[in-house]
Length: 323
Ligand code: KG4
Ligand code: ZN
Image 1 (cartoon, rainbow, N blue to C red):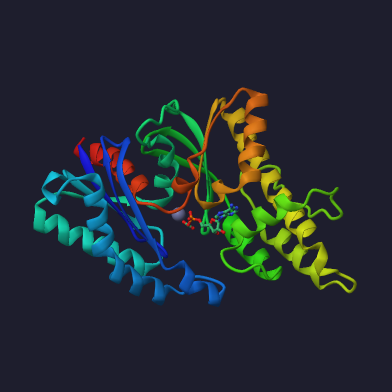
Image 2 (image 1 turned 180 degrees about the horizontal axis):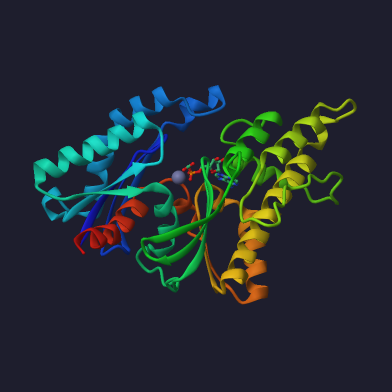
């Protein structure tokens, strides 16, 4: 079964073709990110206008790359929520119109759960083992930080979430405080990696010990106070970026491992933009190896918003709808 996926929840316009929920035949992403950089964040109005301009050619390119035509598609999967309303509307309207014209079903998909599903996608010659379920799932993106107990492919139980900023949002806001531009995650990741000296500053993370919930806004504020302090030397920016990242990565790692232990689960699936963070990947890798937990993190391109995860997840959501 071939599914055309469409993803337009934020600034990326994505289309992809995935076979049987697993093999990526094509995946294409256009982005208006560069246009938002000057504003230090996504401007929804600009994002939705660009979605409208990009959507036809991105879908065309995905079909062309897959070497198929519209008639070879069995269904269309589309991100229904969460996301920017104007952007979502473009993808959902396009998918419904296409489905109506081609007489193909349209399957509406949850963007966050699809981020977890990126771990089940495989490209040609990709021989990584498939994750086993049940598992713990961590989604760390610009808008969400969710911890799930995943009992089946479409059976997600939310066990923890952020009480304030999402992890990616905290990276973006701290990057703004440090004048590193937008988006902040990749900039902080690079800068922190360049800091090879002993730490000169530490930022405590909120541990919320009886809960799997997260809170990052206190750490962000601690960074703000630190850099506004008299005597702060901007030459210390890499030490600050490093300390902030260590604080966020430390608490994410700790809660994932605790959730695995408490639920007796031996598999951890991670997804979302912040899953591209090199220190988070390293820290989870070390902790999971120590505890004998199978860790699955998607390749970098599948951590970011993309339509392959939507097409793949739609395959299972379609099965669920048929039952
Ligand atoms: O999942 P995503 O592409 O979009 C949403 O659904 O939100 O995530 C975007 C977020 C941004 O906040 C960005 O700063 C963050 O992912 N991000 C990173 C890294 N790459 C992207 N955060 C930390 N380290 C990175 N390397
Ligand atoms: Zn996302």
